Length: 197
Image 1 (cartoon, helix red, strand yellow):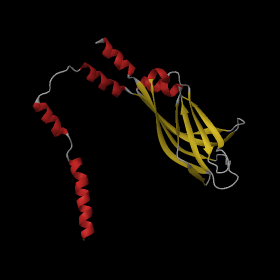
Image 2: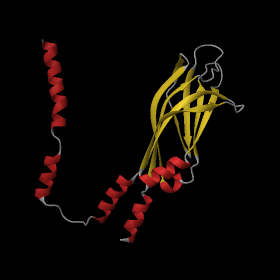
Image 3: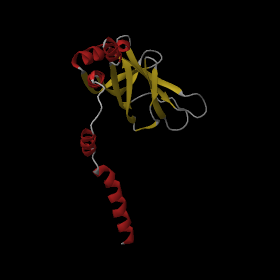
Image 4: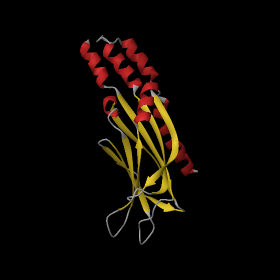
């Protein structure tokens, strides 16, 4: 039994969901052509990149969500998340627009204590190379201390190895939503009928 308890403690992890909404009034580094911006997110050893989005009317839209999964023991050592805004350029290396660093201490502490925390999207200053500010990036956060997964693992670990009866297998089979399998078939048939008409 002690080995099962250690398995449960290893499975404790936290998930940080990051929503990058948009950026406004950020620096334009292209000399020729329209700007095309993307963001590189970095937290610990993991890194993501948003899609490239044109900067129209001084506002850049991404509306993308990313997930960072780490064991809770690692989250305690992660101090910040970094967002580097880049401008895609054709004739030279991509231009650095600015960056935003957000400290995670409060988010992780409160999220771990309560089980989860949600921070609605809010604007954060974009810092340039010379430590001045130009524009803002709007970002939202959700941190989940993965308690549901822990409970499922605990239940599974405690379950004895009993043979299953045929009745319980048939009962579980009836719980399956069969209508999902029939829905695409009905949809295809209705499309064929519409073509024939």
